[in-house]
Length: 104
Image (cartoon, rainbow, N blue to C red; front, side):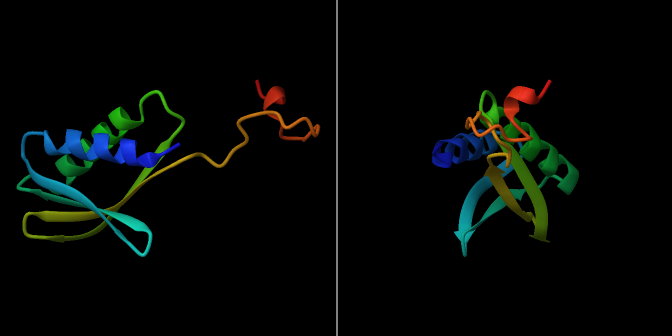
């Protein structure tokens, strides 16, 4: 699964939120950082991030993780990532103890 489409949808929908002046993502050493320029307070920004990331992940087996990193006047920086859960999603036929067929 290519996460570029998920990121593009997420960033575009976050940019269109009222109160968000600008929003962009930068990858530093392979870690995605989300920059949000706004006059809203931190709780409102985090609510919008959760809301828009849930919309971007709808219908896909993904999770998101957002960690506050730093802030400056009217700029919030978060470590935000989308990831696939670390669990088996199919039966490999090796009679594993944690086989997905045994889950109820």
